[in-house]
Every structure is written in C-alpha cells, then in structure tokens.
Picture (cartoon, helix red, strand yellow):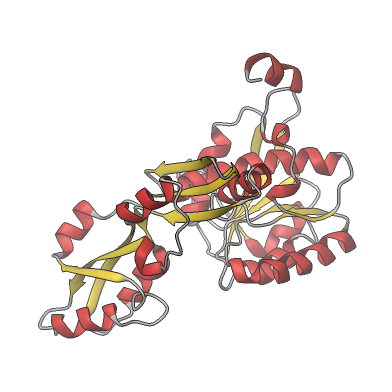
Length: 324
C-alpha cells in the first residue's frame, strides 16, 4: 500500500495532535514538520524544519496540514501554501469563511492544487450535522451549544486584564435551555439564555480582585452578554485542576413533519482534549484530499464537498460489508 505523504506546518497544540493522529494511521506517513522556530524536536523525536525551506518539499508531500491560528496565520498562510501543496486547515472565523474560501479557491485553481478549509468540529462536523438535519427536517430550527469546555479566546482575554497573572474560562451550556430545545419547543434563546461563563483567575499579589471581577463581567464581546462567575484561586490550583483543554457541545434540530409529529435530531460530543480531537479530524480529511487530488480535483472545497467514504482508510466494499 502506497502511503499518503503528509506534512505539518506549525507545531503547537494542534501540530502535536496531528503528529499523534498520523502515527495511528497505517495509510499515512509523516514526511516533515515545519515551524518558524529553530532547533525544535517533536514529541515523537522528529527534528522540525524551518518554514523557510518548505518550498524544497513541494514534490515530496501529498497533503500539508496547516496548524496555524485563524486570526493572523491562516488568512495569509493558507493562500501561500495552497500555491505549493494540497492543504487542509481549520479556519474557524465563521463570519470570514466566504471571503477566505474565495481567496483559497482562486489561489488553488491558479496553482492546480486542492485545499479544504474550516475542518474540525465547529466548523466541520457540526456544520455537516446542521446541513444534514436541515435537509431531513426543512421545517424546524437549529440550536448549537458549546461546552462544557475551555474557551482559549476568552481565557486569553482574561489574562490581558491588569492584575491578572493567569486564568482559564469555561463555556457551559445551561441545562434549562437544553431541556427546552430537547422538548421540541420553538425557543428564541439569547446568548445569556444558552450559556454560562465560569472563570478561574490567578491574581497578582495585592491586585484589586473586585475590580478584576467587575472588568471581566462587563467586557464587551466576551462576557457582558452572559451570566459570568469569577473564582479567584492559587496558581497551584490552576495548574492542578485546570491545565487540560476539554471541550464539547451539541447541535440540535427541532422540527416537524406534520403539526402532530415533532422530531428532535442531535449530535453531541464530549472531548478530553480539544486539540487532539480536532487534529484527528484534520488527519481524516487529509486522507480525503489526497484521494480527491489524485482524481484531478482542484480549487477550494469544504466539508460539504467530501464524500464520507473518502475519510476512511477502508475500501467501499469493506464499508458496505461492515458498516452499512
């Protein structure tokens, strides 16, 4: 069996997870890991290569998995890399997806490469669920809940407050809102109705904790629209109890086929490690992109464009025999 040759660009939490996922895939081979840093060795002992040398590998890699951030890395990195490689990325700024897709599609078609954008669980698996559920129950409403899990963006916002040494923020779905949706009742739920935000903060010595809590709770675009709880804890407790990166969520569609018959469709996930799970999704889609590229597909695609069977290392015959 000829293995799919994979490269990783970026070696943070996501890059580490992709390396792990590839190691578990018998049909994949990790060719190279590229970073902006020098003298980096991966968790599995592979020496990283400076990104300045990445062009030397354009004929040695079938798919490059981009592990940069959506805010500053991917909008530029994606367009540049798809000029050289077939790519997979996890761009997750929902409002900017159409613009990013258009830029990627233009660059990929010009280079003759294939790039899939916005792979992960949301956007990604949750997007597929929303599409599928809506196609099956056109008369209905979608509800998406996130958590319980660590929000990296909100945690970073806490750490930027004067007097804060460290902090983590958890997004938590409200059980009452979940019960309303699962009952089939049509509900116009606000952000405050659906989610609670719980913060664990390590304050600097002699910092004004009341002022910190007030600033957190009234921070626009992050906490002001939510019920927010702030706990002040020690640095030791934060490291002991809040060092992991769990996450999860639910996509629920409440719909009806007649006035008498209501239906609830739901996809839920519960993750011990958000980066490791997202990385596993990226690796599966790298397999699909390698297959599609061999067929001559070019341009940008999304998870909506990928046949489900292409994600699996099993043949169609095996899938029909064991899973259908």
